[in-house]
Amino acid sequence: MQIQTEQAAKNSGFTQVYSKGWKRIRELSIKNSGATGLYAFFAENIDPACGAVVCDQQFLADQMQVSRMTISRWLKFLEDEHAVLRIPIAGRVCAYALDPYEVWKGYDTAKSYASFITKTLVNKDGEIKRRLQSMFSKQDKNNQSDLEDFAG
Image (cartoon, rainbow, N blue to C red; front, side, top):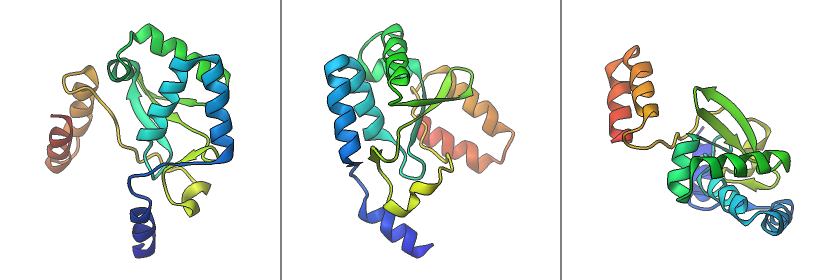
């Protein structure tokens, strides 16, 4: 476990983009520059443990400064291009995963699995925060305290 922690620390703060990933970025930028920006947002924010971002479309719209409908169109484009895999989590929240042979944030030996222990990106006052608080209220108070520190 110590070796894995040390390896993860070595890659902290940077995202690996492989040749296949650079090719993907070039192709996406020709077809849809906005969707390319969303792809880059996912690449920047993927969790090193699993290669995914968990959030809702309104959060993405807020971050990209566009409407939720624009995000929806960009996501459909990225899915049609097989650039992003959308995995429904709960309600409007999805995990967005990238191909680990295109873009990767963890260390190389972690590619063969995805545990989906992710950082979840949420708006401070959003519906997701209320749902997460409700979910954690059923668990111990320490978890709820951690959530409150994270969300607000």
